[in-house]
Image 1 (spheres, rainbow, N blue to C red):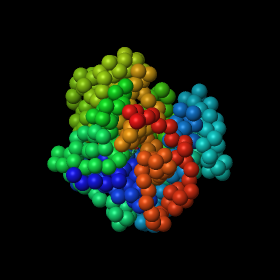
Image 2 (image 1 turned 90 degrees about the horizontal axis):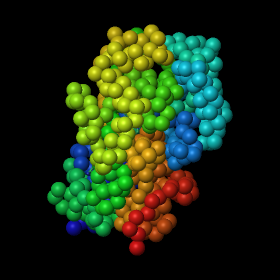
Image 3 (image 1 turned 120 degrees about the horizontal axis):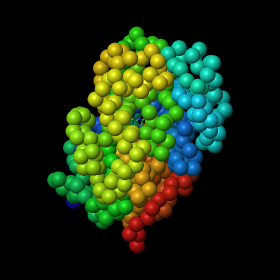
Image 4 (image 1 turned 30 degrees about the horizontal axis):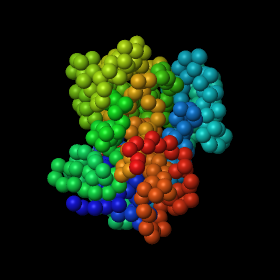
Length: 436
Ligand SMILES: Cc1cc2nc3c(=O)[nH]c(=O)nc-3n(C[C@H](O)[C@H](O)[C@H](O)COP(=O)(O)OP(=O)(O)OC[C@H]3O[C@@H](n4cnc5c(N)ncnc54)[C@H](O)[C@@H]3O)c2cc1C
């Protein structure tokens, strides 16, 4: 059995960042990845926006807000060093209903509470909106000037290269089957070490093999994107989001985004799918599919399906998945000139993995620690934005509480202050299970 100080399950952006930080601290690290390369799932299949935390309620989304605020410069550092795209296009979040104008003021308060500088945002009045973005209408907007478009897949690959140089072993095409007492079983072998489970869509299933997280269930929602024709794309200079219609649910309504490759895209919707990897298909029977999807208790899922607002969201987003006309109609609430004829083709699809408990959707990431393992569940948007701080905080927490034994490390080639000075690990709220 091969032994490491740390066995990371999952080579997405979070797992790769964890491996980088742990290797800087002199730990012997192995990353298990079921695919043939890193970043084959959410970490490449996303909107690609480095979000500023104005829209994150500092009480209910506290950790994501801190992570987004403290990871912005570290991500920029990596992009500069590796010549990766860093396009500071800015985001306008539009109020499409008059009553949503209050929400824009709320965003200004949250932005300051979450550490944003007053110079980096402003509230745009209705009369100014059309002058800023000729293709957009609404009752006003929140303008976040430093929201940035990037390619998180490329960022992940670059960090993986540095991590490998520092000694991390990457085992590809290796799927973790179960975790028990610091041993990870794969199809072919067993690996021993402190386990950090950051397996995205399979993280809950794996945590449950270790006997934890049984109070949660999970639903998978696919987000589809459509590429716009160049001619109409030019009328949008920034990312255009709207104040979400369903504030109780963890989804943003479809938005217009500027990709670093020059594409302007619309998406994503939130189409309920059966598995973490159902990137194709729209024709399965909606509710049979829904009840059978995800992992964990059916009764928790049933409770959500009795919620009218949730049913309306699921039905609407199913329509957006099968009909270009329908998504164009939704977007025309803030971009009136847009029609389905402007859609040049499909973009990439990505899948979110949302945890539910007896109260419905769980708003934040859930962190569970045992004697030999640390599980990260519900690590959804803006997870890619917050990955640098989040990873550093997890590793430093485990080192500072004596679960990982850091050796003489190296001077970190990147993120020196995050790794050596940031005390953010004290902010993480962890659920402990089965500790001796
Ligand atoms: C549609 C969409 C849009 C988004 N937009 C944004 C955005 O604009 N900005 C932002 O900040 N965030 C965004 N996010 C969220 C962000 O992409 C995720 O939070 C982030 O990528 C999660 O990273 P991860 O490493 O936890 O998961 P993943 O990238 O899913 O990585 C998990 C890895 O684990 C591997 N794995 C799974 N099971 C096993 C197993 N049993 N054994 C071995 N390996 C396994 C998988 O193959 C995968 O590589 C978006 C997400 C989606 C889906």
